Length: 232
Image (cartoon, rainbow, N blue to C red; front, side, top):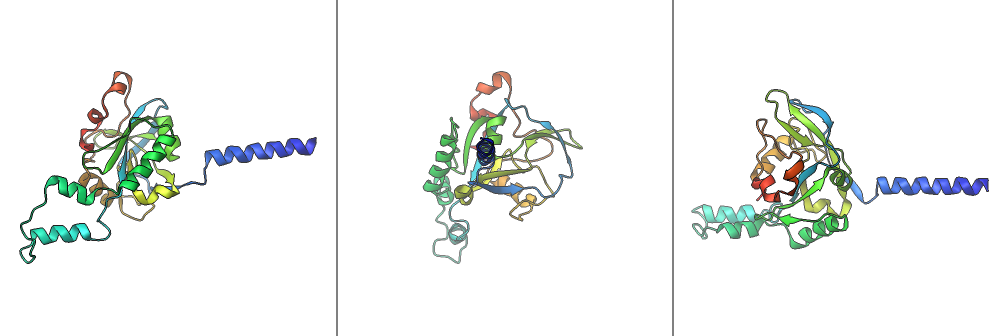
């Protein structure tokens, strides 16, 4: 009986551990240096609503197809010079692969996330989630941060995780590491470069505006677009 009890206890402990740190999740981004101009404050309340954004990996970037096409239509040395692309054509050129979008959406839905939409430039999936939901989803902890010089406040995390099969489909999430300027993230890309990428995608990140903040009270029911119009 004694050994049976010990066996049950060990089995229960192993089960709890497997639920809290699922093997399917891997580290996606991590800040390896303390932010120089931001002060870490208290944790974000578990019931605060956060406007979450998942930046999807764009098509025709790594293979150079997009850059080559844009050069051909903008340089007089090429036969296609002057054949300008419409805004819609540019969106489609760099739009994430359909199967990538579907895979990320399927994960979110299976995790209990609802109200998922895709930005008009197709580069972001967006949804509202409580802090508790976001922390469970990304295996992270969210804190308030305040800028030393301006007093601007925002929400961020120091690291987060994604299911291993989705890492190739996701560039970044916000709230995430975007304010941790001066540090290095897990991919060894300077955060300044990631900040530039975020701004190219439609996010403006600076020390003078609050961003990715929690939403309380009557704002909880506000349309997602009104929480962060720049994401569209």
